[in-house]
Length: 495
Image (tube, rainbow, N blue to C red; front, top):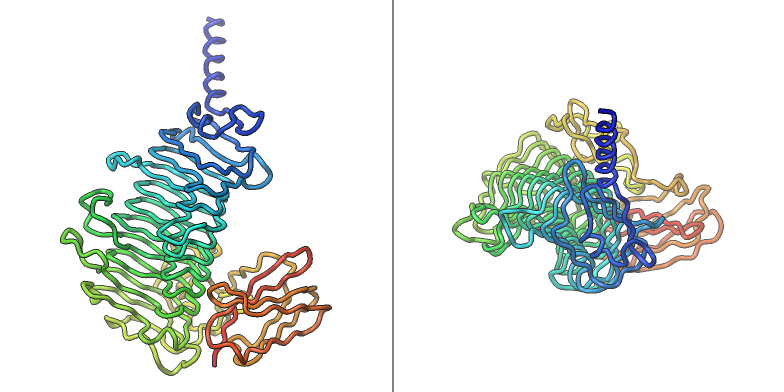
């Protein structure tokens, strides 16, 4: 009996050990290539990558962990492993219960990372987690994506950074993906879109992300998909039940667009200075199988914009049903003309606030928390089940916008605290007081990320920038300090 007990315990320990192996990849490691490690992987394995950069595209299929023992692929270095160049850096097909961590992608000519269901719509790739990954930029200008997902269910994308997307592509492009969460990511300099969900996508939450110069549409809720690519094939909408909340948008042609979307909600976001439109309502795919864009809601958002985004503020295309939309408790403020030029909504708004300054704590420090006396405090529809941009629960009564009163600031580096930039919005001159901070260089960029002016700074003193030659719009000031640390602050020029 004692021997039987020993045998059973050894068997259990052996199984546990098998389910928690650490497999190394690189020169002199367990496997020279990630593809070989994946072919031999068992549920519970952690695959650590040690060679960087990886310059050849890698294709992995049929990699399957379990709910209890997912497979993890991560960097074994102190920094992210970089996939550099090639058509697609890393491609997965028909995988399950896989976590991807601490990976970076740069200069792909196709897609940075591609995850799909192998073309079998009846068996989607599922339970995929992507975290702490970075996309530096594409070496492509067409319909190429940083992260492409087709037929992926039950997924999480969190704490990632995306920058410099292809002009015609998306930073995250989803076709027929379901039950996902995209949170706490940073997107900058998008191409066509930062996030696109189309082809029958549904039940996806996009929350607590920051979008800076997000391209044509920072979030494209829907799109235009060939009917043969829908998942499932009988879907009657491009996007359904997509929830967008507690995000911050800086610039972009339009922060978000409903395109063949139904039952989608956009609430408690803060939108700063869209280039042309606050909202777009479109139907780009007119196949008879699809319902018209309808029954979506826009609630508790702050729209802070200039005259440039009022003609019109809403872009409504043909074959849509804008009269079925719900608008409630949004705050609309034209900082160039507080008394006029506001959107002509397709339906009467309930509880909307028009022409009142939201009174951000400090726009120049990216602190969009409303300060005392702000009309955004306590005037929203109650959404206490959700959290704001910083993860703090919304109080009752709920505020309008992405940030609670006294919630915080996006300044993470203490080196840059105490800097004062004024006035903002500015007209002809901008003054930068560095306080006790040692700033070596100041660079002014336009909304497209183009460098306009560069100023060398010596000592700790106020510095004035002449803005007379610049037109109205959103710009960004980059302050470079010791050890090349930098901080970027949005500045609005209003003339």
